[in-house]
Amino acid sequence: MNLLAVDTAGENLSVALESEGTVFSLRRSTKIPHDEALLPAVESILKRAKIRWDDLDSAAVASGPGRFTGIRIGLSFAAMLGLKLRIPVLALSRLEAVAEVCPAGKILGALPGWKGEIYHQFFRRKKNLLATVGEAAWVSPGDWPQVRGEAEARGNVVSLRETDASDLLAVARRRLASKKIPPFKPFYLKPAGYERPRR
Image (cartoon, rainbow, N blue to C red; front, side):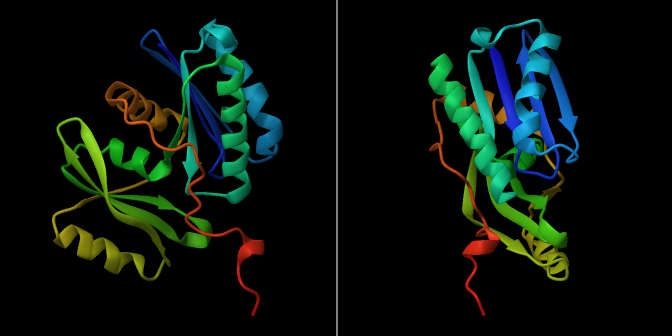
């Protein structure tokens, strides 16, 4: 399977491709806007893997949480890719990707957010299945130690890290194998700035 993954929801843009058991990945800084950097980045990684666009079997995109505009860029690109190539495209949570790399049975997946905030969600693993427990949330930097301490006291392993596109590959493989495809929609944990009520 040739599986492409893109993540434009974070500060940096990242692209990953798994082809014949080999993973190719790259990360681009924010010096170039994501909407300008994404297509050249994907073309670069396809060239490295020596495959063409129509060799792709499926694709995955980070649906959030993260930057509002970045989420929209990634989902728009993935939607057009799926339509053009007629391949399955998965919109995947970055919090699920964080939890996926942790082998524990009870996990608190967490991501660095805006201005030190922490996005987080609980997960449970049973064999090869990973399920969410409750809704995702965010906390201020000052409140995070308490949230983390309470989670660990209840037996959860905290997986806190930044993600990139390569982290989406394992989630996509598991989802495709189980045929549990999530809805193709953005994961806006927080509203965009212009959507916040004015004071």
